[in-house]
Length: 268
Image (cartoon, rainbow, N blue to C red; front, side):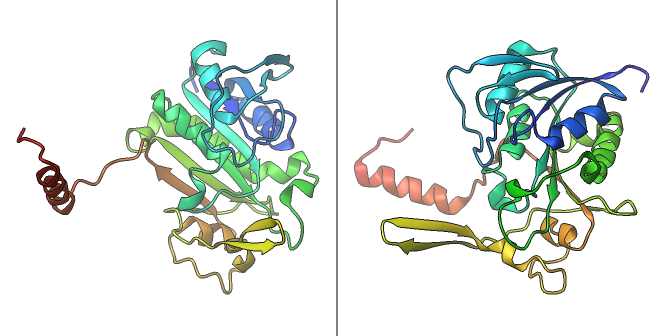
């Protein structure tokens, strides 16, 4: 790069997580990176926002006692410098499928940036574990080599190439680093949804069952989806839009007219 990019880096695992440190080290080789990230784990907070947050100076930038969306607003509106790009991650665990887009703190940070008209990249890493939560896994910086390699490349080249003229943000999911770099597939979010609930006395346990069938030999997600690409060992890049668009159609127009007639609304 001739002129160093300004990047705002955040996450939802917390400012001391291994994933954000790995991205900070990689991105800092080619950009000016300011970290504004949560004090602690804020996974699955979506775009939850706070009215007031404490800010703590940190060796990487700023630790915010709030959500990833709080961090983006605080970073872009006040703590700045105003960046060319927002990067969120690297999340310790994948963020795959349509239903995750509004739930994930990692992805929601990218969506929040889109409302500021700042392009963004959300990067997450698929961790294939049989039992227990991803949070129980101890990660080393080398585990994120796949994530840092592709995110650094996209951060360095996507703006100039015009990628963000057609996408508000990129949702990037990578496999754990292997012996060789993984290939990339441009994908769409999977539509699969298998949330379940089971009552045990006064407790209802919620379970996301899509993770029970990530075996590439049997995964039901179709070709071209983010979930299948990652399960088969490829990097998934989904170019996505924000905010949500409307779908105007004649049936709803007729229903609205019927309502207005039934309650006596005068013609406009």
